[in-house]
Image 1 (cartoon, one colour):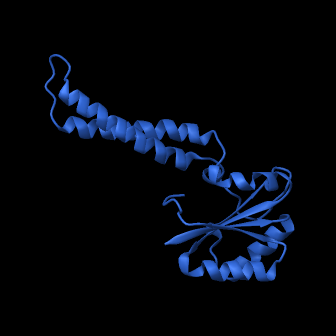
Image 2: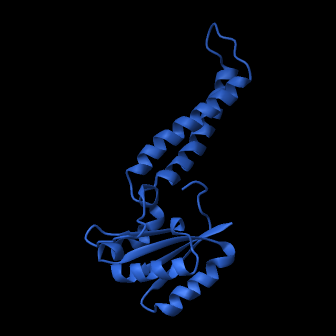
Image 3: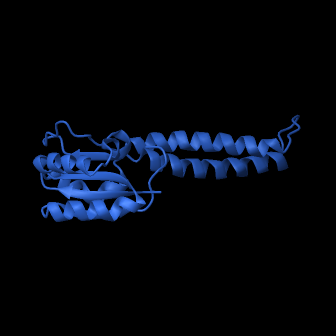
Length: 170
């Protein structure tokens, strides 16, 4: 089980120092992402990617659920009131629910890819003013250790909380 920690760093220099310290603490570089505005030049640090910056994952999840529900409803209605000349079986419900889930995930994912990540909304103003957001995914047993390490060695860095749920794939 993993947790996502957020830290707000004042500048790029602090980002480089924090990266070095986390690497020395044996935090995998693939589990760290730094998000800064376009004017802040982060060199040699893992930057936040497309999935981190957009609402693609959240949009796809919501769309899949809504699409499956609507597909299920559509399948039941088709079974109860079949089109003239067709004889439908109960598999119709499963197929329409699956088709609805796929279509809903695709459409909502496309919409979510066009908007900023809703989980990072609280950090946008500070990042636009030159701050750097550090996102770290850690095993549950290491969250307290890393939080204390960073806040003890870098009083200028602000701990911004823990996200209890991490998506499975990004």
